[in-house]
Length: 88
Image (cartoon, rainbow, N blue to C red; front, side):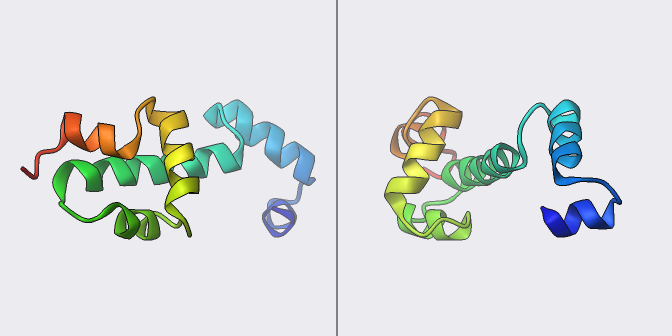
């Protein structure tokens, strides 16, 4: 964040505030949301195992990924796949 703030000629605090005002989330929350959207697409359209999807979405372990996924999707990855999978 420090490098991005310097590049934008502003403080980190101002950058974070403006980011939240513009997108409604902190940068970390925004990144989590993007990763979950990518995971949803993979769960819907592939038969990849969950550990592979976890890695492709930038997480190191399935437990952490599943916790974040459930926070954003209100379902576990397994429940989401069962409900919305097109790759049957």
